[in-house]
Length: 401
Ligand code: NAP
Ligand code: MG
Image (cartoon, rainbow, N blue to C red; front, side):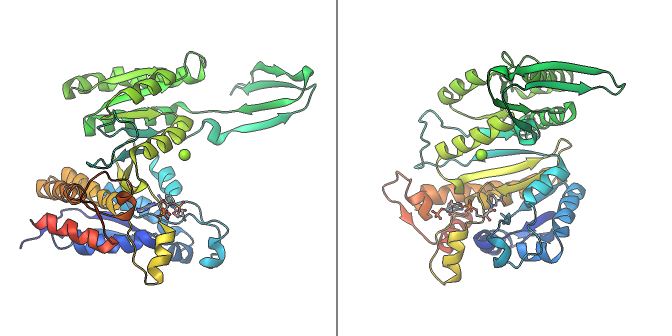
């Protein structure tokens, strides 16, 4: 059989623990038999990150800028317990944080929907994609506990030395707290453009909401920047694509999200995205079914699963015990990256393979063959819980049938 050829390599970022095991299996069982896989390989496993003083993470992000498409395995973000476990020189930063900072990207998370795994919200029949603005607001705040008798003010010193000053609160009646937050036009505009582009790319409506009625300057500025960029650069393209940009209040959007069937992108300010992405993920069922892509404003894509390295399963695997780890989100990271590579390179057979791979995953689960996490959720009568490897073999059988 002739394998599908690739014109340009993917940037491949290997990772840690159980997802590293799955990574190799996916390549061996589901991809390399069909695709003449070309990748530029970066080992982001913690051992090699430590060996290279984390240089490999920076190199992989630079390579992603060069080639435009990457696929990433879940990686350990070290904490105190990992220091002795991996004999670390330093508590290296989260690779995802490093890569996101270099690509200046926005993360879009989308649940993978199958028959038998029903969302907790019965109206949700299509996926809701959450885009979280990952800069500023309370995540880069300055805060004080304020003693009684103090007065808190905001002071802005302009470039010419002039000062704008405004009272926040007079604490003469008792102690309290204050917080200063900021954002930048550049970051908000990049977020807006990335969301508009992703909506066009995936042909879905874009919803955005803030609390602009209360926050008349801060949140209103988000609304204005989105509106200006939309009017100037995207309105026509959206009309042509038959999709809509819709702005409303955060309270209103929450009500609509619960009532609506899904199938749109919900752009969120940083805190809203943090909280709502956890709520949406839980409501759709399993972490193992949540895909994720980091997109930069200039159209660079890094695909991954939303879950971590599934550590508990890895320790079982090391002891030689049977595991039943869900590989779906990691397979979708590969199919997403291959499809995007195919689109950019003009190789439709690569896109068709990505479609076929995803269809085989869905068919497998809907035929009743699934991993343990899904087995406990599925409403199918003929469901069967299989091992990590049996699940991949079943998908392979569906690719070939
Ligand atoms: P996790 O690896 O996502 O796992 C949390 C729990 O969720 C697992 O113990 C498992 O539950 C279940 N689960 C997650 N993915 C699953 C899958 N594919 N199949 C079956 N069950 C799955 O999160 P964590 O335990 O908080 O973090 C572990 C490591 O991953 C940490 O070192 C963290 O730094 C890292 N992490 C990396 C990323 C990333 O690279 N993007 C993201 C998050 C976390 P049961 O054990 O009950 O079966
Ligand atoms: Mg959160």
